[in-house]
Image (tube, rainbow, N blue to C red):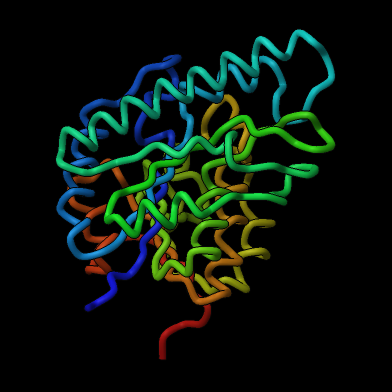
Length: 272
């Protein structure tokens, strides 16, 4: 029996929500992405992770959750952020189910423990069993409990990279709202140049040269700098890493299947 390769797909919050409107999902994009997942799942095993966008970030920012517990007033924010992320997750999972995908929610705060922001425990067995049944686990950025900080934000980016390594994924697809990596923010700089491929070892020095301004008012998970930093280790370990535009129909499906598509590839070594 042929074993299907595993692909981790991260739906960026900027693609599945309208980040300038609190708790407004981009239903048109979500439903199309769900159809693209359905079209892909017969060829690969899939794990989907999504960001928080306008659901999680406003509350996490308001209550300063990323820096951990310091005031009892934050507990309301902890509950609000968890509730909001669950709302977005249910919207995405509903769209996947409606498209024919057997999508199963895995709540990160129930299976992950952090220590000073780093993952020290991640119970993966349910994910492995879900994949064995040819179902699709769906995780998301979450407020996760931390042995030292009390709680903090565990980004969908970090979850995606961690799972790509621990589950031996063949490919890691980051689906966002731009075509890939540019030398500057293409939304505000018309001279930004597109980078179609970059070696993982060059990425760290590149990150020091670009602005941390991601073009939004705030991003508690580190913006584009945080995302790219999370992709270095998987690429160095041989995972094919692609950053692709989720707003363009068919791009995510082609990236999942390893077909030709405009994107940024982060590679261990340039192809000869």
